[in-house]
Length: 178
Image (cartoon, rainbow, N blue to C red; front, side):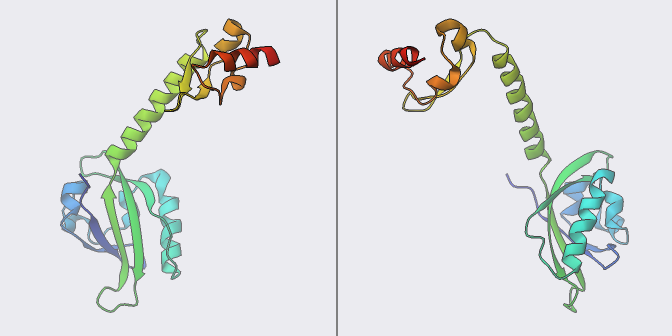
């Protein structure tokens, strides 16, 4: 399920002048706890420069062009990954500030990190294996092969990429060519 979208309005000093009710289930703060505070007080110290850079772009009358991902402090003291988008509406008398929307993407960030770590462990395991391990596409074409093939068949792994895995004649031709 998609996380609730939180909206805040910031003045030109980056003070929160409005926060939507979705703030509390997302970051644990009631709207009145954030209003009046400087938005950078709620951001991870390592992400403040990026946030200030993006705010300057918005205040300059430009669109950032892409969502920004930063860490925001939850009321319980933990850090949550949030994806932010914004529009400068300072010239609109009804709004009078930058409208920032964000949503919690902590689960997605953690899932991506876990997948990257798993892939890294897999690659290290495979790279240090003396076995022949290969990947194939749906047509049975070799897309990748470990260097163990050199020891087993005397073939360079790259030579097998692009050949049919279950075509002994093709593998024999490669072996003869080398």
